[in-house]
Image (tube, rainbow, N blue to C red):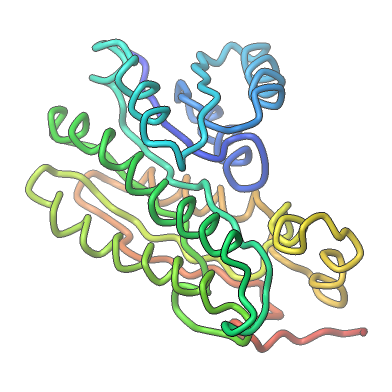
Length: 254
């Protein structure tokens, strides 16, 4: 029978990389993302390789959209849902708290915390019924440290870190693994979104050193998911070699 992985934020970056790599392991995929055109492009690409793909155009900030998508899964699909990757998340803006943009704050809180909670709320009971499953919460080095100008983003990722610990306690009796993934500097659309489309400013973040790539993170998630049933990797921090902490990055050129 098929084994299914459900991935949020599946149309770019770490989410897309996870979709491609889990498909190579023989997983069928349930992909959630806001951009329907990209979902269909990814679905078509995967189906050419014989992958079974279900897609839902969903904004994880919308609880009813999340509920409708997950509740619409057939009982057969639900019974083989093995992996959840809570990947959808973003940073918007950067600056001191006294000059914060309220809309930016709400987007980060609604996506990074509430979106993760909505998806987990509807997937966890399925895994409890199956008496197995593995939940990956994609946090950040910003969930371990705080840096200047990162206030609310860091707070949301600290919340993801805490929720991973709490979910592990809540679900351990149901044989459900929970892994927190905390990447450092990873060159995806992250900085484009943070700087609201300013490509030059986004590019400057990664100048002078080799940042992580989405595939690097996906490979680690695949590794954790493929450990024996009695092994769980609780918390994984992944950094580029050039990065020592959230704010210390050795750049070989300006």
